[in-house]
Image (tube, rainbow, N blue to C red; front, side):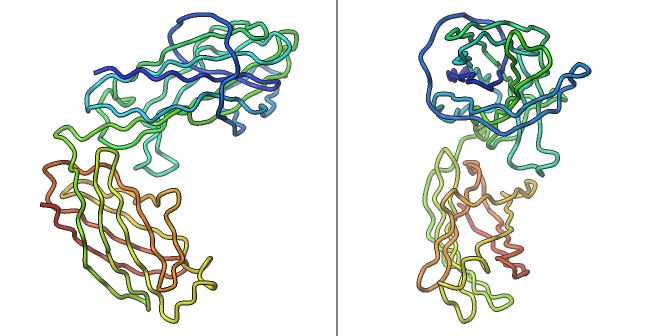
Length: 301
């Protein structure tokens, strides 16, 4: 199975570049979106220094959903919107694939090393490249199902300046590798409650579809006052696992904390649940500055 996504990245006045397999060279209008964050972990020639790049733009890219074992193709297009010619360093640039289910310090599952080309783009010129990922990690093993970030390191310089390099790093898109046997798609109303360290935790419901599962949880601290809880209970630490799989971190959704009149509602974003799964174990280790352990088992079938 092959999935193709086109990303248009733009090299602005202080921009860099990215990615894999030569394609075409053309002129293109500005794209939308942005990619930033300074980085500099590639060795540079003596005397050359890296300056954090200005904003690099790319078109909004939908998440990629792929069957387990499939091949994922990502087409990336880079355009020089500087007023002068720019040279891309180490082309195609380094690309890393990260798992959200691994610790931040060890979450890179696959690295595509930078190439040795140094193509020069005139103002307005574009160059396209295609990255193909076979869903394997650096050891050649199939990665587990779940969400993965495709992150790129970009470097470029003005063609007349050999002593300065502009660089940035950021996420190009995300890839969801589905469970091999299919995905559970249904909603479950829950009515489980536990009390620890003065906080009552109620599981309300779980919604499951192809993109993942959303777990709704209500937390009610003793003497709860909404106006006073914004810092005390908003941070959390939770994890989950399906049947006998390894524990994974539970990620709160982008807008996953709601201070209500009767408590704090959290929404956790979980990976898709395998179709044949029986039990999901969910555990909260910390709510705000309050340590504790609230443990639940959810019957799925």
